[in-house]
Image (cartoon, rainbow, N blue to C red):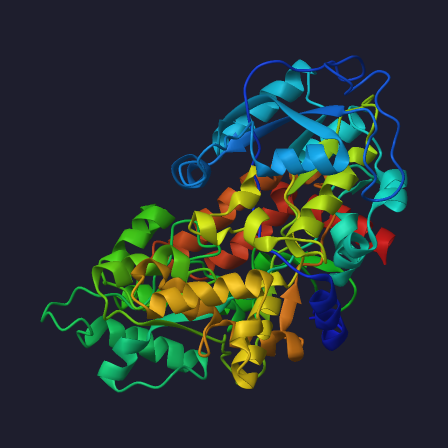
Length: 569
């Protein structure tokens, strides 16, 4: 099959080094009021508006009020706000920066807690037609709003107002970044410039490997042998047969405790659209290589290497098993030491988790699966007077965190406030691709040259966290697991250098069949795969699944995806 990989890696990383980089997530804030989708609104946010100031960072002479909506997650409520005295969601350093530097006053129509509550509130808001001037929505919501003529075409504003740094960041991972926000040839929203992650890895209890006299895995046979040993050789030393080799959840896929990395060992890439080698896109879950991976998992389950109740356990429940020290392996992304692995260390300081590169069943290079991650976008209400303001806010968020005039230690993770993520106070949160790998490379270079005292920005903040752990701050255990000399990012760098990524090839908005049937097809896939793993049905049920998947809408979805693919080649 044809793989989509990063090209000109050295140039890409050089670009990132020059432009700066970040880490971010997403959230927005407060309750009340709303706006007519095509008419007036409070302040200067609609009719009349403010004269567009020239340039990417031009300040509006007359203050421009922009109405947003947002969620406030647990991290903000329980960690960030308490540790930044005097700041609130409605009054903080980021809103002051937008006001002082751009002349933009942010007001919130409503705020809700994170997760499903935000999604539900957005749906209600869209149904009412009374939407804020700018709002973060899903790809499906963006497409629906575009087709209903509820949001502005941002194409001309991007071309004119995006800073050079912003345009470079969006170019690093290829055209897919902007294609994802394109509906009928128009840019209808702005998402983060990073759409692919840092890689997937094997996370193992290195202390168990040492205790049992096992070497790090080089092949999938090694992975399965380690799983068996972790299950049968009493690695926790309590004399009871109560440990498992591999942690997985009922959802099968995910950034932690997921199976993407395991399947990649069989050159299988489920749960993503990939090029089949002939120029056509296929749903990876329907390819025969997946059947081989399921067969191996079924054997492991039968041997007791996987929790018998995994089919009903979500990530939280499986994380409890990890915390209790009852499992020694899981597949996941670079941040796994922060969650769920640190909980095991907190209960048992001898628990030594380490990240390893993916391995294959046949010794051939394995590609780290990278699902397309542009799932949310900021959009501008149709009729809003100054759509370019969204682009300017994106520019400023990048500049203040990673630009030449930026102050990472104030706007991103201030050491004066226990390094909490104050970037979440911003109503827009773009972040550069490869930011994490870039920080690792800066630190690694400084380690080699004995210049750690010359680090700046995010790399300095990370180095301080690692030093604090070495000085006894056990809550920071995860940082050296990721960024230390033996940290997992050493493998990300090699993935990049060797083009060992399998990038999801579909980067468009949801097709019509996706909107109608994808949830049903995903439920079918999960149900069948879980049953196969648990031995509740034969491995041959996979072939019937492929047939049913196509009949129930998969064939139509594949046709639509390939029509999109042909249009962007």
